[in-house]
Image 1 (cartoon, helix red, strand yellow):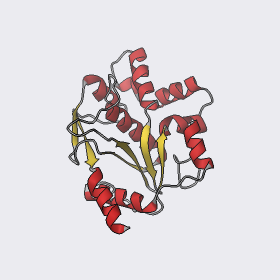
Image 2 (cartoon, rainbow, N blue to C red):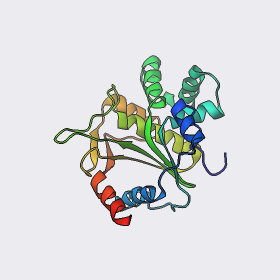
Image 3 (tube, rainbow, N blue to C red):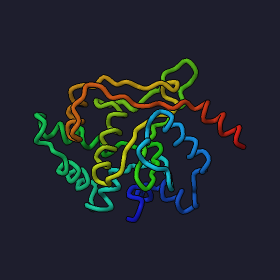
Image 4 (spheres, helix red, strand yellow):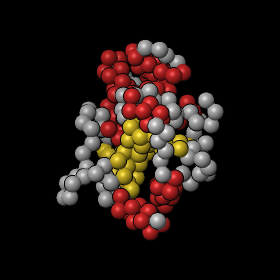
Length: 212
């Protein structure tokens, strides 16, 4: 796999088409995004070296499909079997459903560098409207966070989760339900709240305009 463990694995048709067409993210925009994350005190202990990115991908599913399994069901089974499920007192069928929702969660923007990777959920809310997240018994950001933490352990790379355009540049503080706390225990975390950094679109776009 070389330096990149997640980039180029997704085999959804749209991802394959983008690669065939030689799609490449704008380097300046990517630099601005990573700089904004560092200003929020993210990625401070890793160096930006050769970041790459893909949009609308399923990193955890395709990591296991590529490395460990063949069939759709085997991916779910092997991810489930890789987790310390004995730590939680939940019916297995319910827990498998929650783990499957983590595996199936799409990532709007995956950024991967030599020593780290970032999941970013992008939102474009209408004026005076709150950003909407994908519904489910487990919050979309919690599913993405757990997915990232699983991959962090597998790839030995630092993981960060963020949103852009979701909360006017202010952190999102999620009060976790019991089932969400259960999922976090599967990645060795015990907490009642999850804070996710939000980046505002306007400052990033303004900086890009000034640089042109």
